[in-house]
Length: 119
Image (tube, rainbow, N blue to C red):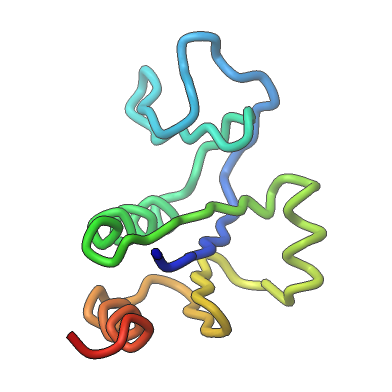
């Protein structure tokens, strides 16, 4: 079944040209910066965004999370975020619940456990 998790971030920099050697996913560039490829666009997330995404990734398998990253630095995502009243990043949206900033991992686990129900 899985739990859909929307993660809203605001990257430091966006490049519209995808390096030919990189595919969809996450990478480190030559100076050790995190580089993510989202829908064919290269983004450079800030430290808070990386920390939150890594936290979600550690819980992905246990809770069957489907994580969708939305970078509001991109024009297409900025409009969606405006209508969803996303003003702060990072922000995690799980169903109707919103978590601003960097949550504690046990806070996320409580939310996922409540969605999955007992045992």
